[in-house]
Image (cartoon, rainbow, N blue to C red; front, side):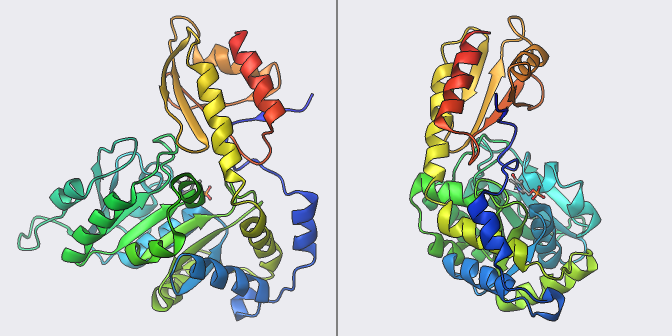
Length: 341
Ligand SMILES: *Cc1c(COP(=O)(O)O)cnc(C)c1O
């Protein structure tokens, strides 16, 4: 029986068609700016989001941290949500790379409001404070259970940023999930965000890679920082080809992942050991167990024994993630398994 891996959408393996596209890629030395496939991926993705330039990198952590470092002046502060990936899961990189302070705001499933952000901007006429230099949003929000921003709220946040001359960065690791779920226009994102980080290795199903998008000048600055981080790479076109393949073939199908996450939520809802579910908006399903009935360790262990893997998500919380390698048959198997616990 095949293992069903619901731990993350990063666990997907390239399909034979994606591997064929990778093998056929035209490549060159990317540090010499000579890899045509990397160039094509960067240009195509930038155009999709209405921004001028792109930078292909090994990970979303690198694209986020490059952007934050490039945006931040010395002795500054970044505003982000308290459970944002850039703060929680990037090894304290804001402190290490940008040497910036962080203003953490509590979100509604990870979402911030324009009013909250406005209230956190430091006055500039007081020597006690760092200078606010960047606002970061995350869409969809990972810790918030794949929640999406409404366009109106992002636009209101942009207005606040403009009024205070602050750049706005988007951690768009799963921005394609947000686009598919909300029907928002990717090109319009370029009017809101000064920089966007997009992961190809999550729901899109590429084996490796993220792309940072921004103005030509900003991306040039980040390219130098990428070299400083040790991220200058060579015939990366083989990996970029997987990204291009993913953009062409794996975006619309994200709706299937969203439907499957909703089906799993539906199946969990009546179970006596499930205390709370964050209603899935996309492919991330986070729920809390009533551990007086079933502990997280038991739940995960008993599923694992049936070839079903999931993640403990802190305390009594568990996360299921649907993705390219989770079929309808597999969802049916999971539904049967959780009902029988
Ligand atoms: C996965 C993820 C990233 C980047 O992670 P890497 O593993 O470094 O590619 C960034 N932000 C969010 C919200 C993520 O889920």
